[in-house]
Amino acid sequence: MRNEQKNKNWNLVKTNDSWAIFKIMGEFVNGYEKLSKIGPCVSIFGSARTKPDHDYYKLAERIAEKITNNGYGVITGGGPGIMEAGNKGAHLAGGTSVGLNITLPFEQHDNPYIDSDKSIDFDYFFVRKVMFVKYSQGFVVMPGGFGTLDEFFEALTLIQTHKIDKFPIILVGSKFWSGLWDWVKGTLLEANNNVSKEDLELVHIVDNEDEVLDILNQFYNEYNLSPNF
Image (cartoon, rainbow, N blue to C red):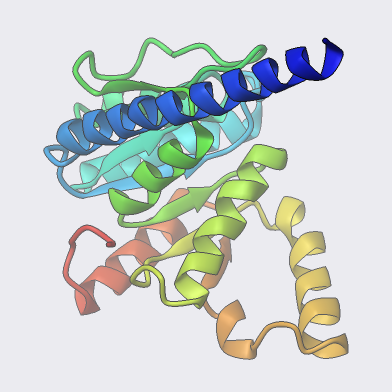
């Protein structure tokens, strides 16, 4: 009887997995339909825990406002912290403000600065990350935690392996990022030869909004703005 019950439970899990495919497809279709209309945008990543009085929050807001005033929209993860700052800057500048929200047991709730028709909810991280990459013309990565690092390294890997076209990846805050990047150069590159020097040239480290805009404009003076895959 015990083995019979285990088999029933296993079959139920397999059935649920099969039906999940349709939910995943629905998230892709909804994301593609809404985001295909937004125009050129830059994604801003960073910690959901950063408070509005923090220097990094204020900097993210200025970055978003600056790039919006220069013709780009802004995409964030839709939540609080740095994400809110990015949407706020775009909103105050009168530009496109997109939020790709994820359902989480803590931290995540959508912020009030997302355009009402550009707030999209996801249950699956991998679907959400596809949307970030497909509809972003650049990644601005503010200080953050595991999620921010995940988004940064996934984009870098996809560009490194030529799975997507090259676009600017900009780390903001040299004090925050220098330790990690020194390890990448000293351990991954020099000690173990696990990456190439050319890979490291895909990433820029800056400290202010003017540098962010300069890198974006320099890149797109050479390349056309278009979806990345």
